[in-house]
Length: 224
Image (cartoon, rainbow, N blue to C red; front, top):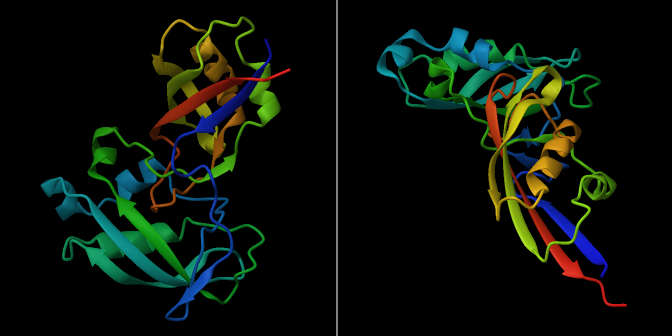
């Protein structure tokens, strides 16, 4: 019996946002940053008062994109909670962002920055990844178990650490349902095919953070 295989990366952010819309003169788009702050950079820049209180925070910056690809003249459009120094820290961190070969020079851009107190404990997790590359259907086919076992739906969750360049390292199977079918090993073999952008959709660092990567396999017999 032949099988048609569908593998779904169930992260909610596997499709990159393209294009852009204008809001109050600001370009809102998912910029493919080539350089961005790491988890250690966020931890080092964490405002002292917020750090002492163990608070997380969010900042929405408006900046002008420089010709060199770095944001400049940034201002905090929103800062929550206010009064803890998140806005000042976000403006400083924005200097580490870079869009190589930018086409947005001199345009006003919108940059979200998320301060998660988990970075202070070495427990940062990527919740909204922006994917730079994903496995192809052929990659999935090459790592699929060779024996037919009657299982039609399998869910595998990989736990990995994001390394420099956005690659995944130290991956392990965190869950395989149902277990023992060989899909976990196949998913592990795919890990090298994933690569993240250095800045997440919600404005958080990814290099040095953990990520849980759910992959769902759906199999349907092919009628002959």
